[in-house]
Image 1 (cartoon, rainbow, N blue to C red):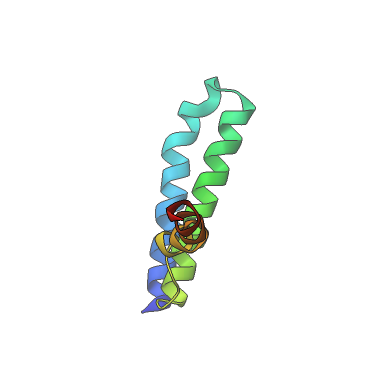
Image 2 (image 1 turned 90 degrees about the horizontal axis):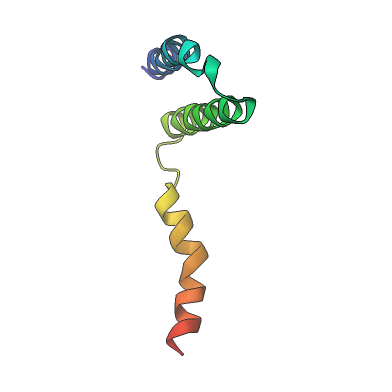
Length: 75
C-alpha cells in the first residue's frame, strides 16, 4: 500500500507542476524558486509521514521550540 501511495503523491506533485508552471513563466526566478522549494518540502514531508506514521508533526516541533520560551515568560 505504501508504494501505491508514494506513486499517487508523486503523480499529484507532477500534475501540480504541469498545471502551475506555465502560469509562473511571467513571474521572477525568486517566485519560481519559492514554488519549487515549498512544493518539494511538502512532497518530502508527505513521503516521510507515509513511511513513518509515528513521526511527530510540525505542531509538536513548534511546541517543543516555544515551550521553554513560554515558561521563561511566565516567571
